Image (cartoon, rainbow, N blue to C red; front, side):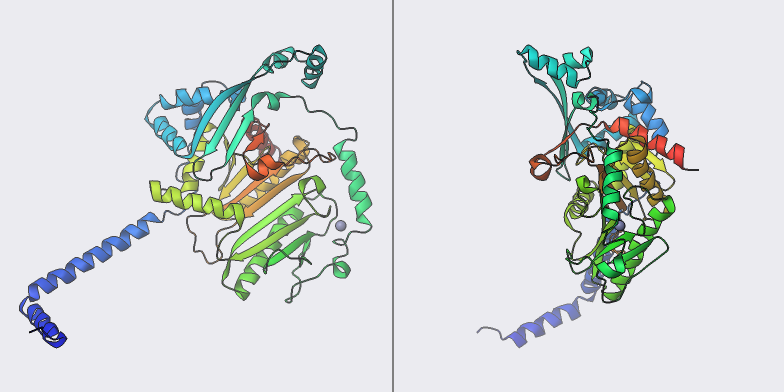
Length: 444
Ligand SMILES: [Zn+2]
C-alpha cells in the first residue's frame, strides 16, 4: 500500500524527535555556514582607499627608471617594463599589479618617401629637425590596452615630438573675438528671460545659477551657468561656486526622488570642445538604475577586478601609477596621467569624496591646460559615488582631456575615437610634469 502524505510527515517528525542531537548539530552547522558566508560577503566589498598604498617617492625611483624624472617618456615605457619586473620584491609585486590592468605592445611602422618634394615637406612639418626626420622612416608605436575597461590607446612617439604649428589666427584672438561677438545675444547672460527652470525653481549663489535644459537629456538634468560670460576667465572662487551649486542641485533632486542616485557632471569648453554655447555651463545628470555610459563601464570594470583579485580597482590602479611616476598627489586627491587616454592630455583625478581638494586639483589641471600649455578647448566628465552611499567601492573621479586648437575647423574626434581605439600624440610623462608645476605655481 502507498503511504499517505500524513503518514510520511508523521514518520519524519518521529525521526527528528528520536534524533534531537542530530537536529541540534544541523542547526549549529547551518548557523556557522550563515555567519561564514555573511562575513565573506562583507570582506569582498573592498571600499576605495585613498591612503593605503601611496608610496610614490620610493617606488618611482626603484621601479620605473634610474634616470632623472625629466628624462622619462612613454617611448621608454616598454624598455623599463623589462627592468621593472626584475627589481626587488615590492617592485615585482607592483609590476604584477600593472600586468593585471594593462598589456603593452611596441611596434615599428616603416615607410618610404621617394619624392624629394614630399621629403622636404615632411622635413618642414618636423621643424627642419634632422633627427626627427630620420625617425619618420621607422616610427616607434606603443599600444596600451586595459583588460578591464577594454580601452586601447596607440601612441606614436614621433607625433608627440612634432612642433605645434601656429594657426593663422591665434587661438587667444579667436577666443576674444568669439566671446565678444556672442556676449550681446547670450541667452545664459540673460538667463531670467531666455532659459527655463525646474518646477521647483532655480538655485543660485554668488557666482552661479541653475537653469533647466530646454531640451533635456533625461528626467533629472540641469545646467549650471556661471554668472560671467568669458569661457576661460574665471577665478578659483567662481569655479568652485559652479560645482558647489551642482552638488546642491544633486542633493535636492535626490531628496525629491530617492530612486535617482547616480550623478554625473559634464563640461565642454568652446565650440571646438563640443560646447553649444560659449558661456561657461556645466551639464548635471542624475540617473536611476545605473551610471550613464562610460562611468558605468568603469564601475563594471571595477566590479570584475574585485571578483578576480578581491581588491579595489581604483586603489590598485593608483598604486601602479605611483610606481610608474605618472601620478600627482594633492592632499587627499590624486591625479594620474592615464596610459589609455581618450584623447590628448587626459588626466584622471580620483578621491574618496568630491570635496575641496578634489576640485582644487581639477582647477590646477585646467589652468595648466589653459595658461601653461596654451590649449584652450577641453571636455570633462565627473562621476560621483551613488547618492545613497550604496557604492563604497567607487571613488569620485574625473576624466578630462584637451580638445585641440580652438580655431580649427577640423574636428579632433573621428571614427577612431568614437568606434575603435584612441590615437594620441601627447606624452603622459610630459603632462604629469605640467600638472606638478601648476600645483607648485598656484597652490598658495
Ligand atoms: Zn553669456
